[in-house]
Picture 1 (cartoon, rainbow, N blue to C red):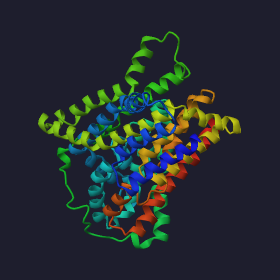
Picture 2: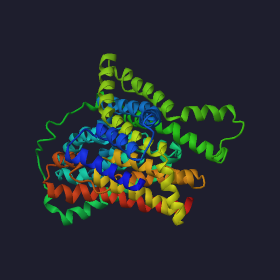
Picture 3: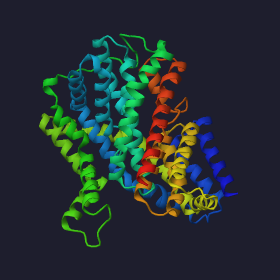
Length: 459
């Protein structure tokens, strides 16, 4: 009966979002309360399950990471750092390898910038390059989109993977290292490789256009007045350095197990690798490297910080709403019942857990549209399964990555990204299905294949 209640609640969520066009955050909160009542929770316990144990816990872990990440991305962009990264790599790679230059530039920038903002900032740069090279915008745009989407799905400190990692108690640093492997491969497959296939079955989409309404005027920067390439890249990836160094140190020195009496060095590295600490330090560095060093006054810097915060505020609320739904699943004992079902069926192998996590996220993605909602809801569903399984840090990370892969599959008309892609590349709905929907599915399936291989090797 509980599973029927869960299915009805998810159906309610779909109806509220797709049929009534209700705000996603509001829809998630309403669904969380309804689910709690349907599961027979004590009414006095529901506010805590939704608020403190759900939304409060999720936002408490992630708020600083998301907001500071958005601020860093905006600082780099407004100072001209993103422009410098793109232009430098394009000049290094040359006209023959433009796709690879765009792929690498977009990947670097996408690490610290949410998908929608990355699209808005990079499209004008890539469009200018396409005009100069005499190639269709989509020829370069597929690689750009593949890189941004892969980073969004698999790499902390991006909002969705960070929130999912925290929800399933996956090690952020380890997820970053394995996520880089998955994201790089998926970006290459869904970028330059997929472009060749797409040009064959949808040639009409790859038309050269000198003007696209949604792109508008291309903003130009004086390269001599922008930050250096090295400084721009360093500022963009600075948070990652803390997490990678800490993870490698722990794996090499302690075998990944926290010692009973950690050394001072271990404690310092562990402190600096905490995502909130790493992002705080990185933001301070970004204010200096992209602000003070560029002779930008603090009023201008503050404006960039505000714009960066505004860009992620909507996503932060959705993550909080997803946390509320997850809190009800955990507090009601529903997650444990799902785990018991799998235990009784004997399907608790690591590969099956990874496949289940991907499948749940995939179904939710196709139904709801939002990758963040799909990821957070799926994380709540699989938490009980992970808690019931023998503790394996690597498995937790791979499950989080599988959820990320599932949350990207088959984007269509109920996803804002579908319409953003359509408008920016001036495509028809049919062409958007042919390129964008297939591209996202390629990322998802490629990611799943890599994750399953890693599961077989590492777990």
